[in-house]
Length: 111
Length: 115
Image (cartoon, rainbow over all chains, first blue to last red; front, side, top):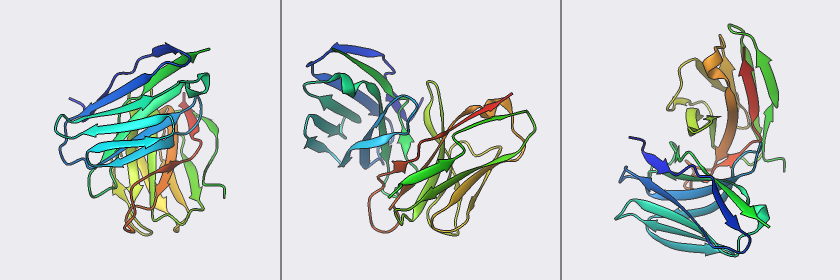
């Protein structure tokens, strides 16, 4: 069993839809949770970063962490074609050096 | 600021050849990382360097060696390339280890094909 599970998709939505992306994990030591966006043939770029449980909002993006369920989510409101990319969840423990990534979910937003 | 830079962008090797992938960062980060990305596998950590002068194995270190040349540069060497090492390689850096978080910043990647 992988430490981090993420549905690879692809997920296809119309422009303006609310998108929900999710990951589950098995290691209760994870404390830091991140979402990265990766455009085709580019390196990942950090979108959201949260510590422990709770919600964090940044513009159209909201990250949620539920440590009791070992479940994290990224919501994208008013999705745009420019949001079409692969979204990777990532997490690490308090040591901070060994980050575990999900396999990524490919998202397509249709105009 | 260039952020994290990697060279080369593309490389084709024959089985058994050796090569070194170069990475440099200009953000004064303590920590640097090498990952490989394969379809359906996500990013897997090969090696990391928590600070200048130290290196540690990640999840998939076999067949690779690394050198933390100075605070800015972290290289990855394939001594005898194998087709299983065909992948996209990403270097990353972070401020982890200096009391800061482990937000990682990635380079543009090197696409390596081993024939």
